[in-house]
Length: 506
View (tube, helix red, strand yellow):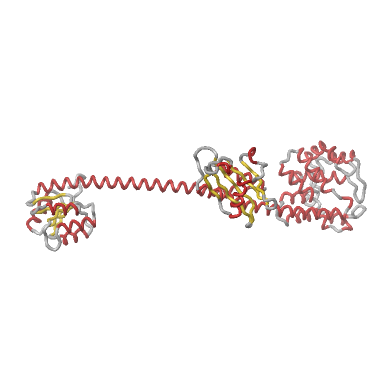
């Protein structure tokens, strides 16, 4: 019986039936479960059934399979099962052999049953300690493995989060210059670098020029020359990241202790290179650092390419639309430069009203394009030297919708499209094309409406001469709250002198 109250199973192996019977009867009375076998083969058959045996007592000299072979078989199958040998013919040779086979004790026949039980108790106690120690060691190893796996998992999660951050960060920039600066800032953040620089390569002059540097005073404005430049050029041409310890050639790397560089290529063409260096302390860059720098470089290259493509498309569209306006104004000598002046006055009013930089850009764009819809109006109406009749006026009223549709087809400028559509709406609802009133009209459209009316009255038209400054100001002041937004009028009155200076002959 074990200390915790559970029944212990023992196996007794002997070719003498009398010994088996006496031993079984004794240990059963003591509370043990007993299995018996007459040789090693029968004993292994019992063990192979999977019955949990607490201890095996075996004779040495038996037919079929002796005790030493049985001990060896048990050791190979379950080294934790203790084996006690019983023999009437002890010898040094047998003692050595049994120890080699993993036998834990050696009893001399005739065996005293009480002595046998004492041996059993001692063995079970030692085995319990051994198993407990083994389990503790396994638990320690398991905990160490779990800790190592957790640390590895945390590192992987941090790395994935870092890579995601790098990818997300480059999606928010609209200019190449912002990307250059961000490459430097991000590279400093993810590495141990003391200094990071972003160089652009000029193929025509074969020079490297720093566009963004963490140490602006030391680097920015210096064209790269000498052996350092040659090394970076080689790195770019070979398109292979560079990681070096600089202790052997400190002068080559401006005194840095550790240095790395990652080239940028756009469509297989060398664009530039990012460099990072450690000048202080004992830290050195690792393979992980160069991997992250290279990852940043690749993402930067993609972002630069996309931004350049967008900027090119944007500029081309701008140029195309401005060409429409130029063609329109070329048809009507009386309205030449009208759109440019409307844009300028709109921006003046917007600044006076505290518009944001983004809103001022929108006003600038919409001001230049507000009359682009007149490209769809016939010349006999657009250039008529006298006042329009009702039918002709209804036709000319279509130009805000036509202009909004032209810009809308490009799918880029929603705010500008709304301003173009509504720039002839009146604050009191009597305008066109929708009859919108007050806050139903976009705020920037209300601003542009004042600027448009001002320049129209202050310029020569096909059907009349320009009005005087006093008359123009008077009409705009009188129409405050009627045709025009009172806030826009109040802001215009503050800048009216400057606005008049920009008028033809102003």
